[in-house]
Amino acid sequence: MTKLKGILLTQGMHGMISQVEGLAKALDIDFTHHTVELNSFWKVIPPKLTPISQNVYQKINQDDFDVIISCGRKSVIPSIHLKNKANKKVFNIHIQDPKVDLNHFDFIVAPEHDGLEGQNVINTKGAIHYLTENEITENKDYLNSFVKKDERKIWTLIMGGPTKYYDYSTKNMKHIFTMLYKLLKKHDFQLVIIPSMRTPINTIHYAKEFFGDNHTVIMDVDKKAYLSALALAENIIVTCDSSSMISEAALTGKPIYVANILPKKNDKRFQRFRNLFRELNITRILGEEIENWNYQKLDETNRVASIIKQQINS
Image (cartoon, rainbow, N blue to C red; front, top):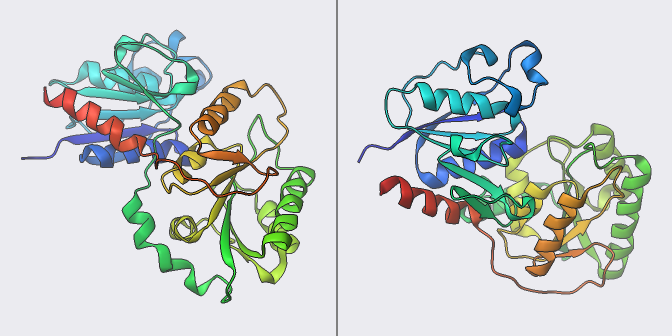
C-alpha cells in the first residue's frame, strides 16, 4: 500500500518540530517540513482575525499531499487554506490550541492541561514528541567517549532556556546548580549536562565552570548525546521551562526531577502540566528527598497516532 504524503508546518522551533515530526513518524507517512513565513503585518495579527488567504503567508511549494500537520500560531491559517484549496480529500491536524473555530481542522491534538474540548480534540498527557524508545536504546553508547570512566552512576540534567515566563539569570542557574552540587556530594554520582537549542551559551559555560572536570558538560546541541544521556541516566533532571523535554524524558520510565525557576509572570498553565505529571507519579521537584519510583512509560505520540489512523482508515 502506498504511504500517505504529508506536509509539516511550523515556525521552526525545536519543540514544535519535535511534535509534528513525532506524529508524522508515528502515522508512518512520507513528509516534508516547511517553515511558515507570514507576510507583513499578519505576523502580529491573531489567527481568529486573519483571513484564510494565500496573501497571508509565503507560498508553500508542494501540491501533492494527503495530510497536513501544523503546530504554532503562524501555521494555523496556512493549514486551513491549503486544506480548503486542495483538489482531493486532505486531513489537517493541528497541535496545540489554534485559537480559531475548531471545525477548521479534522483533528486537534492538545495537552490535557490546556483544557481544550471538542469532538475532534484528542487530549494528551503532556506534549507529543519525536523520540522513540528504540532511538534511545540505539544511542546508549554514544557518550562513552565523553563521560568520565569510573564507577559513579550517571544523573542527567537537561536544560531548556529563557522564556517570557522563566529567566536563565546567573542567580537562577546558581540556585539549581547548588542544589545539584549538594546532591552529588551526598550521593556520589556523575552529572551529565545536556543543553538544548534554547540554552544560552553563557549558561553552558557557567555549568562547565561550576561543576569542573569531574563531570560532563556537553557544549553543543547534539541529539545523539541527548538520547544517550537519557539511556545512561539513573535519574533525570529537567528545567521547568520545557514541558516538551519533561514529556520526552517520561518515555524512559525513569525518575524525573523538575528544577524549578521562580516565574517572571503567571505560569498557571505550566503549573497544571507539572501537577498532572506529579499526579501520574512521573515527577518530583528537585530539592525533595531523593527516592526511586516507577511509573508507566508515557508514549502519547503512538497513542494519538493510533486514534488518527483508525479514523482516517474508516
